[in-house]
Image 1 (spheres, rainbow, N blue to C red):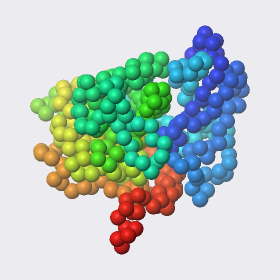
Image 2: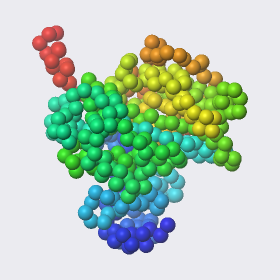
Image 3: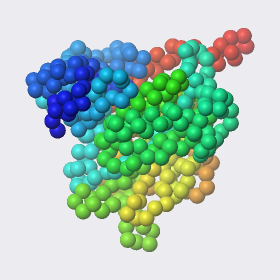
Image 4: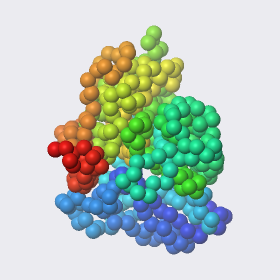
Length: 446
């Protein structure tokens, strides 16, 4: 692609060169268009590698998890991701970049490279994974004081939602002005969103993405989060992807449908011409998810708030049971023909970094296929009557990940070491905060 020609045609005067940090937050540099074009030729665009060890609060682990912590890396934009940013008045472009060391090797603690690493494992086997994310989120009133709970926003009828409106058409239409901008802005950016539905929570929505290449879909989810937040702000409200933003409402997930195809023939490896319509590879993949997802939780439930979502009878899974057409399990198999046979991972929260969530779920399934693991029998009835096997707190999840040598090898030892250090630092910061619950129930009673 001729980036300079593309920019001249659209009279782009400024470029945002962005990367997703370990929490999925957009970081990078904003520079004049001409300087950006020159940087493509002379490879002079730099960024401190430390952005990938930055916590969600803007702090850093006390230990030096990269050495030296002050070193720069090279930003190399992926020309295929350049698009206009539709919410600016002046013609502005954004482009997703990959980071490389000065010797040309990839920065393997960058989440986009972690996903590329996992996709490389599939490619080496002649396999091609396909995914389709489903992303839930809440719209809320503007909340300027974090000590106050979030509230549903005012819609077109001038009233906030006070009751759950699952799949409500009129309820979703309350926020049509927001979603009209979202669809228009996504089209400008090449974000291939599909169905919009109202979920169970007050002003909670879900957007589905069309199935496709995992790296491209991760890019789209990353950009969509930013797009939705900007559209909501334009209309005087917030959009949040917190896993559990309100105590009396369901949590928000990022369900990931996944299947694996033969890269040469295009055949779905999960389907089979037998009476059941599924293959041994399909069962191996599910078994890998069952075995390794508990250890992968720091990537699927990456924040202290994430574990508030994973509660019994909460519309979220508590274990890695699998079943056909059953939304109480962690691993749901939708009814389909064998050509579109897939499994839906329902564990990840909406707050997860899309690059890491997709990389992790594919890594778990890959390990199951390579190790030819066997799953448990599919269950019937509610999985909530069974034991909770997913970690319930961040420290437990970090211990499980640290002890999983197989996952470390798939995701990269250096990356896992950085992730654990960042998440431990975030948890320590959380532990230093005294909550309103503690003041209410303990202050004068204990």
